[in-house]
Length: 332
Image 1 (cartoon, rainbow, N blue to C red):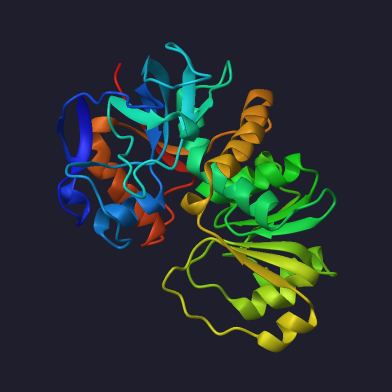
Image 2 (cartoon, one colour):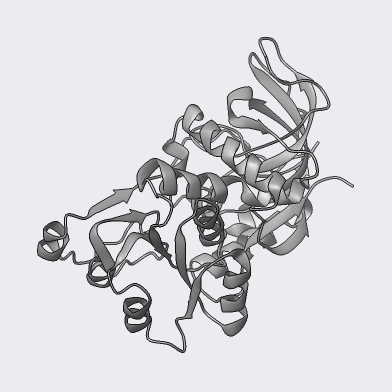
């Protein structure tokens, strides 16, 4: 089979594309014939060695996948050959990744792909969708009629947060770095979208939520906690999902007087059961059209190295070139 893999960590140039032996499904595993995969920031962190993990040699990169089951191993229940599936959390914690024509995956990390939902869309929503769901409902416990602020409403996770929060009945405020992105945020369901390059974000947010926001979802690597705590309502919740090496100042006094809480979490540390609960809602929203993928670039699997360069330019360099996910198609 063709696959994108590495034999050592490093920059995107270490990614090779070539032939590897076809995997065979083991106990409790299914063999997925891959149709689409997508790129996430964590993919680049693992590939570069920024996040140290024990990696197989060779190591197939990638977390997200959508495709069709080609074979089932012993002990598999609930899946059959020909079923369309999607999943995430591969390529982490010693598991092989998904950037390959065939992938042997434990059944616990796969979910039914609803009828009418394209493989590209499912792959693009996989890790970012599960991340958004875990943060919104597992950590922040977002309720209907509450107000949430999320930075970057057209980004990978941000676009999922906007849509899921709206589906849950919340009032959604977000940001975009251009008039086009602001308009896209509104199309995704945001009640208000602020152009942070032309408007004063702090003043505008205070105008839109004078009593504060119930949930403040932070996506940037260097959080401004003074801004966040001031923007939070009493007993507001802040969700952190980035900034592994950040060491910003923290306004302890205003924070505890307001009785606020901060929730940091790492998606790939969630249990299979937690992810399955997220996937059930994601499937419902995908099937109903309440959740739509945000795809910025489409490439063939052979251009895996380029996909990582694009992701790093958008994530680390912040060049604004991505407004959504980079998706790679596999096979015909």
